[in-house]
Amino acid sequence: MSDFFSFGRATEYFPKILLRFHITLSIVVIATLTGLLFGVVLAFIRIKKVAVLNQFTLVYISFVRGTPIIVQMFLVYYGLPVFTEVLFKIDINRWDKLIFIIITYGLNEAAFMAEIIRASILSVPAGQTEAGYSVGLTGRQTFLRIVMPQALRTAIPVLGTNLIALFQNTSLAYLLGIIDILGKVNAIGADTFHYLEGYVCTSVIFVVTSIILERAFKSINKRLNYIFI
Image (cartoon, rainbow, N blue to C red; front, side, top):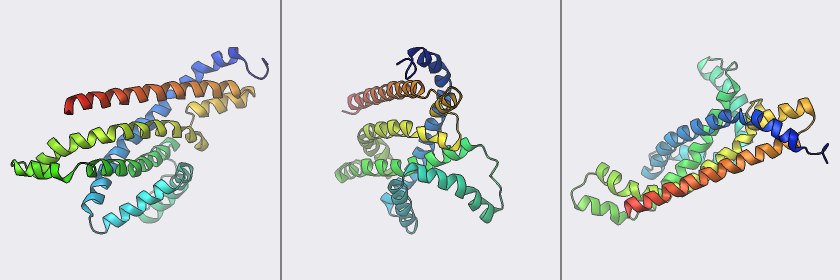
């Protein structure tokens, strides 16, 4: 059994694997912020049905939501340098692979967040907007004071689930040679020929982090319910 799995090896590997947690965390944070920014833009394009842009946005969202993240990752990694070279004569082949990973996850998050935000805003009854206008509020004031708080309460639980899924999906980044948590596990395994302990350590890190994120979003949602009730 000790040759198959060793708690001693797991204890030895865990700190080394945990030291790469900041790579995974940076991907999650930057991709989430990027996705949220572009997601808001895409959501309002869909809500307002902006000519031409609405159709482009719909195709983009459908493509991203309908294809695996690993396919998108390789499309960005191999396709983006060709795209920038042909259109702008810019060579980005020497960019750090982590940049391509962040771009991929950011674009992926934008599509999912756009639909979450759009659905949350549209879930607020139209009567709420009309009520705001009836008391003399402008369109902007009505949205910020009436629509957005209610939409936020609807969106937060879904955004939390989406963030947890993003955190778990970052495990694919090692396929491009990124030494994140899973990349470190594979590096250790290649040197020692013992992979199982590393995967167990990775599972513990992912489970604990997912639980923390889940509880954090539950707490945020409870606070919002208290504030806006």
